[in-house]
Image 1 (cartoon, helix red, strand yellow):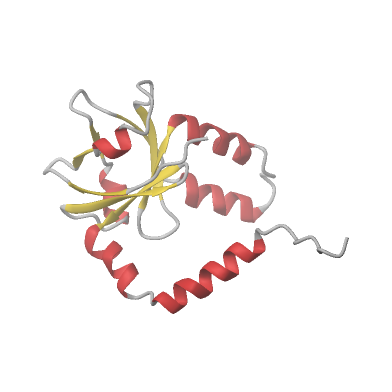
Image 2 (spheres, helix red, strand yellow; image 1 turned 90 degrees about the horizontal axis):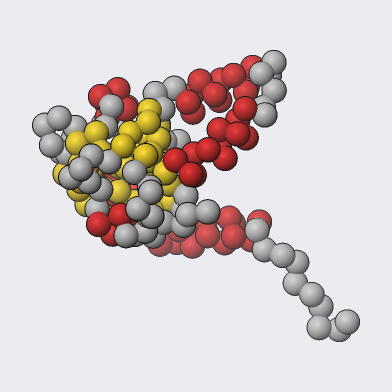
Amino acid sequence: MIGFLGEYEATLDAKGRFLLPSGFRKQLTEADVKFVISRGFEKCLALYPQKSWEPIIQRINRLNDFDPKVRAFRRQFLGGATEVELDTAGRLLLPPTLKEFAGLQKDIILVAALDKIEIWDAAKYKQLFEDFSPEAFSDLAGEVMAENQAPKKSTDE
């Protein structure tokens, strides 16, 4: 499993291409040239290395196709998903429909999200942090991380 780290600025050219930052390229193997790009859960894009995408697809394939929620999820999650490949200059081309979905202009920020990289419009990404107080972040961290903690053993045992 890949565990990306970092946050990098990039610029889209007139054709919708951007240079994958060297900080992320260093975290990939030389074989990692194919990616799948799709809509993110927020107004951003999600860039998955092929090896991260494959287990997700396997899991989605096992879902019950007779469940309308599954069909809605597949439509939303897989709609627009596109395979992209690094060109010889280390650039990726964003599909126009996905670029429009995320409202990407010229300045973008690529953000590590464990097994994927999120691609945000720079202004929208910066706004996320301006709208989120340190107290709200602390509360969120306590809530999210508490759910994943193993129960503590008593020292009386």
